[in-house]
Image (cartoon, rainbow, N blue to C red; front, side, top):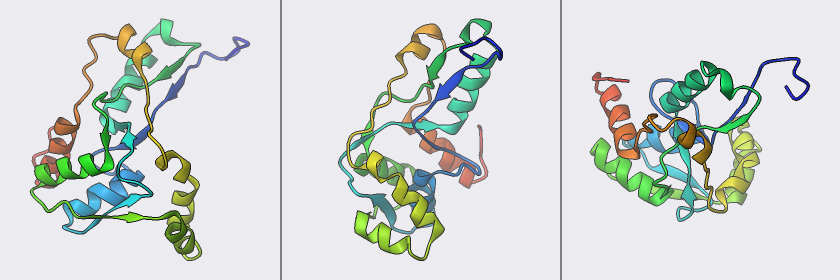
Length: 172
């Protein structure tokens, strides 16, 4: 890309979550569990701020960038809701929207390491632990300045869409 041999761009994003078959740690440990009436699981801490990106927003943002000739040759941070929540707050909001109890338990690093002896999923989750130990703030001001009409979906809207999809009323 730097040498001009390929027309490309770099799109960066925080952790994805969303509807359908979105595969992410947040979907697997929180959303899927809450929707099934099970206890959600939070890695390391429930009090750090999280930047998450809704997978349909990421897809739309990448499509917009891919159809914008001046966007090539640059690095872009894809847009996400700047109303960052802790996982505790995220679970409270999701539980309210899903109409379930917001039960969760913290998974400590040593517990994940122990589970990793038997589980490939736990081993791969353990590799990402550093990002759960402190606030994870993702800034996408460049994208938002370049595309001011792009409307980022709020956590409330995102979780409502996931709920509606589960009830067969998908609008995404």
